[in-house]
Amino acid sequence: MSAWRIQKYICREIVAPMGIGLAVLTFVLLMGNLLKLTDLVINKGVPLREIATLFLHLLPSFLDIALGMAFLIGILVGFSRLSADHEIIAMKSAGISLAQLTLPVVAVALATSLALGMIALHAKPSSRKNFKDQVFRILQNRLGKGLEPMVFFHDLDGVVLYAQEVDNSGEMKGVFLYDNRDPSVKSVISAQTGRLFSDPGAMTFSLLLHNGALHNQKEQDQNSPYRLLNFVHYNLTLNFEDKKEVRDRRRNPKEMTLTEILSRPKLNRRMKIELHKRFALPCAPFLFVLLGVPLGIHSPRSGRMGGFSFSLVIFLSYYLFSSFFETLCLEEKTTPLFLIWTPNLLFLTAGIFLFHRAAKEKPLFPQPVHDAIGLLLRRVSNRSGGAS
Image 1: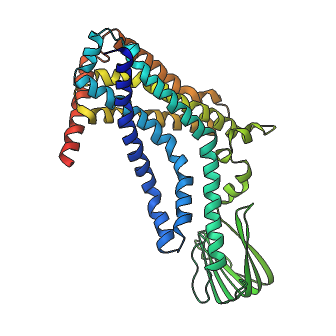
Image 2: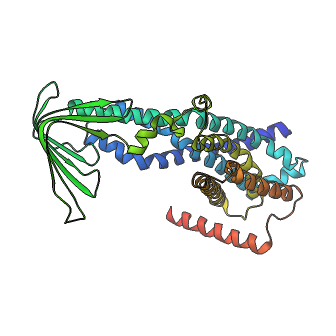
Image 3: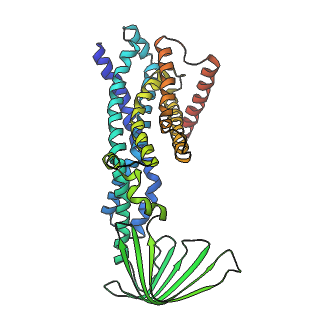
């Protein structure tokens, strides 16, 4: 068998579990939002077409995690299977070096890296903004059509709205509003008439009330004064998002594409950190090649579940390191921003060390560590087999 056919064979062994892993991981990550979206259909009457649009906007937010982990699963599961069936030994006996065995993995890593780059630089920030805009439009549409006379309206977080009469133009009469957005202060507003307005640019709703009264008192302090304010006109702003998010919306780096960030005359710290993150993440597949190939070949004989367990531990370690250094850079103004690249450097060092030892046919770990890892993976495999 030629080296080209062997490389194609290895590529198929990686891509198949990678595809299955990507589908399963994406479904699992979406399940967390499935109940909320189902509630919009059943209880809120939102059309399925709009729910499908929300799903599409959610996908890029999970694909960067799912795709990176699925690639690592593909490497470890594929090479663990080849090693368990002694095919790696047969290939090396035919003169195929470890570098040649790794070439198809590098090709898949390049495609994965390009996909992650597109997601991180453009698709993910655009989908974040589009998702919030879509949710706002749904709520805006419900406020226009969902307000019914003598029915309590709960769709605005922390606010309950009630009107005795609602005409076709949206004018409300006999308005009652309970405001619980600040848990320390309970407010009740009543007015003769009122009307709701929306501002998509600021992501806010405004309630303009006429001829009414506002009652409030601090919840925790019984000695606090009871306030009563009579008004002729009162404009109440109801934020769709948290006040800080609304204030920073136009300059939120997570919702800006690479072009939008670079077009700014001056970048703040959050924007610089976001830029580092977007270029660091697409490099991860090449790090996973250096780690995954030797670990897959020399992993204890624990079957496919062993490869999956290895991939889970490696990816979670990388993700936790990335989150830790990002938080460190955000909280400490004196922390250099290149620390965002520290997880990549750590995994690169570990990967080069393991790959070198695998190429020299040396054990990757001392025997006690190797035995402990094998025992742990066999237990995971046995439990998974028993559960199935």
